[in-house]
Amino acid sequence: MQKMPAKYYAFFTLPTLIAFLLAFFIPFLLGIYLSFNTFTTVTNARWAGLTNYVRAFAEDHNFLNATIFTAKFAVVSVILINVFAFSLALLLTRKMRGENGFRTVFFMPNLIGGIVLGYIWLLIINGILINFGYDITFSAKFGFWGLVVVTNWQMIGYMMIIYIAGILAIPRELMEAAKIDGANSWQILKGITIPMVMPAITICTFLTVANSFKLFDQNLALTAGAPGRASAMMALDIFTTFYNRNGYEGVGQAKALVFTVIVAIIVLIQLFFSRRRELES
Amino acid sequence: METHRRPLDNVVFVLVLILALLFLSPIFIVFMNSFKGRFFISDAPFALPNAQTFVGLDNYTSGILKVGFLPAFGYSLFITVFSVAAIVLFTAMTAWCITRVKSKLSTAIYYLLIFSMIVPFQMVMFTMSKTANILHLDNPVGIIVLYLGFGAGLSVFIYSGFIKSIPHEIEEAATIDGCNPIQTFFLIVFPILRPISITIAILNTMWIWNDYLLPYLTIGSNYKTIPIAVQYLQGGYGSKDMGAMMALLVLAIIPIVIFYLFLQKYIIEGVAAGAVKG
Image (cartoon, rainbow over all chains, first blue to last red; front, side, top):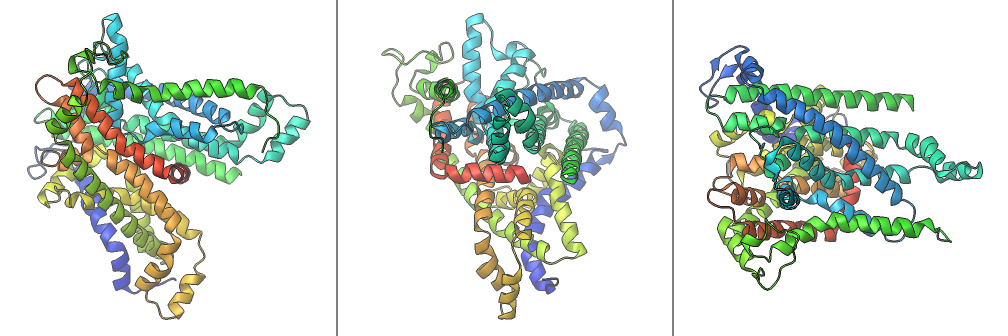
């Protein structure tokens, strides 16, 4: 169907489009505009040029620290989550008994929301640290590793499912031919499994990077940025700037735009890599 | 199927079993602590309840009363069910229309919706909550519009991918038989979309049921959903009631576990399908 009368086109698209404009698009454009203004509500904006951007970085180092904390967190959790998830996927594609049950168990934490996850682990981490006379707010290092543990627990099962799908899609003949030629498990893993699941590895890597950057709920529940704002990640720092300090709404919006650009760049790099892979194959 | 078992399988089985038990232990620990008195939790979370620390269901009654868990459950359920229904219905309509009608407008709508997927929520949270406030969308019905707007990107993207893969001859036959586009969509297309609709419904249910920030900023002060109720108990003034907290965490997990056990096949397939396309 190449054409559709306008009244039908409107019937099919308008409900979504109106909701999209109200919830996302207008607030998005307004957000860009307001990042160059000082304001306390959306109706009393005064032009301020780049002041908000300068204040976001120069007034204190909260945002810069949050960016560094987030980047470090992303590197550590991306590596750990993917190594664990891939190893589990390998263990659970051997046609062993109980595989489906295990998949069910490992995936389950992914369905629990970030706030609830954060408080479950707050109990456990503080329960361990209390034996040494600490709690999680004692040092940003505790918060960092606490967040790594929480996101691992949450994300490993999800990534494992994607890796399992990738591994099961490898043609059996490849494996069998390699075995007949006398390849050992390590050679099969390096020569066949890993190259064949590269698309899954790309997807999982970028999913974990993007999720790490956007992490908010777990951060709020586990440490709320404590001590001070030392364990606040970018999303939490932006939230705090908006809602905990009067007169900083513009600064918060400027930080949010910087954050958006960083996340967008990560996604664009991902698109570039997956497009190139599609062209190669 | 393998005809003979490899000896290594037993070692792997035990290893994975231990890992699985470790994976489940946090939930078990919270469950166990939900039956202990509030002052016996933080100091010794790994100790089983005993005659001195066991308080029966006291934490559950105080937790439910303190944050209004029952209304919170009702709001969460209402918002999730109707938002997901709206997303499934309206984004399927939009995706079908802009995929089948090839025009500049369709392309523009598609890319605009895709673009919203990469923008993090923090970018729009302040302006969106103010807009919602001005337009009186800051209630459990209005928030459905917000979820439709935010969910549109991913859902239209996944639907479009699926629609491109189904032949349009059936739809053309329906048109020749005298169906108008609305009849064609609801009688022919929407039923064909069923498997992908289940995926869309599951992905959006997981997101909306657990979402904290959007409802907190728009309706949180008047209508607390479950995540807001949990956060409210912890962040609220006065001393923290760890007992009530444990009970609330258990109550928050139970509906998810039930949902998961009933639909796990669809959930796991849906997640794999959604991730590969996203």
